[in-house]
Image 1 (cartoon, one colour):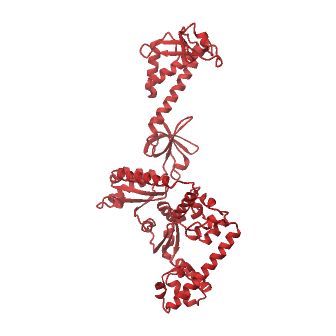
Image 2: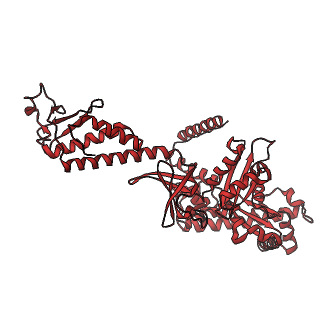
Image 3: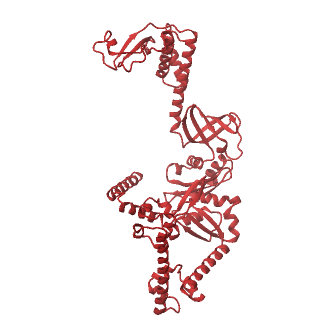
Length: 540
């Protein structure tokens, strides 16, 4: 692509041909040519000069100009491209700093080396324009399925021709031991499109849960139309998967619609996923009910949900245990991913043993602290009493329903419980004071002496210390570490403090200290409510 100033029309013809071939704007190619000609001219006239080239878009005539800029005496560095106000007066009327002098210079003939350099500049510009076009084309297609053709395999990664570009299917995004040969047709999910120095990188996946969801959208018209929604999906790629579906039309069965006539719809998805077995489960707002569905085909006897911890205990018959857990824990793992809960599966015998142990511990607590015989302590536990606080501060009527308990006995029981609790509170407060707890924290409403002691042991001794705590530091929480949910123990977690309660207490402390303006909080809450209402309206 040697370019000479004499062959002007050929410049435009070359630009148009390159633009057509690469599917980019011809103007970008002309700009690249202007830059390459300017570079050649600088090598002829001197690299210090500011030489610019303009190619007429109709005739192809290249105009070479030298530009000099007016600068102050102190800024003058490049005498070839800059000059002072005094020097400029012989060329310009009333020159000012920032003005420019543009002079046309004779065009240069490009020698072999200059032509080769120009060609490199043009090719580089064309490549950049092509990359930008490719990124713009694919960036909005992330999250969709694309059909491509296998070009080659590199170190287990598959390079896929997707029409106007190449994409990569990494080894860990392939299903099982999938192997592809050049020219094989392949269907993938576009997981991510990134703009990188070497050009846009299109990352594909066949193991992403979204791939299965998109496949069902293609096979099930009701999902595409929004009548049925896939609420959750969990996969063990190539082996087994679970999807949770809900129908917004009471006359349409979501599971049946996804299965299709004689399983035709689900079978099409299964075939695409190398025989991956798919359990289609009805979604339910009630988490325990949804979990029972998610653990299919196993039967569940009982579910105990701990919403604070995001944990759930599931009791199954002995003969159903292996089915509920699944091979290598697959069934319970997928159910856990689907529901977002930690699931602990136990047999009925194990559940009975656990409940018996809890019963004995609570009986022992009442026998030791309230000085009761075993029979009477067991009666209390059987009636649902679990702590001394419940005995001390419950309505007397609730104690009178226990066989053999009259008003005098009930009053005596409550008096003993209160005495013990007060003694424990005093001991806790004395210990907290010894650790250096200040009055500002002691007088803060909502904290018991035992809570104050727990805070003091964690070096929270003033109201300022308390106000700097995060809610999860007080109430505990869960974090994701390498894909696993890890428990963070809270300072006040043993006192059954919820995350919301912790948040409210910390905010109250900050307001008391003047760190937060309650008026600002109120206006933020109003704005959030308004945003939520508008979101609901737009959703409707």
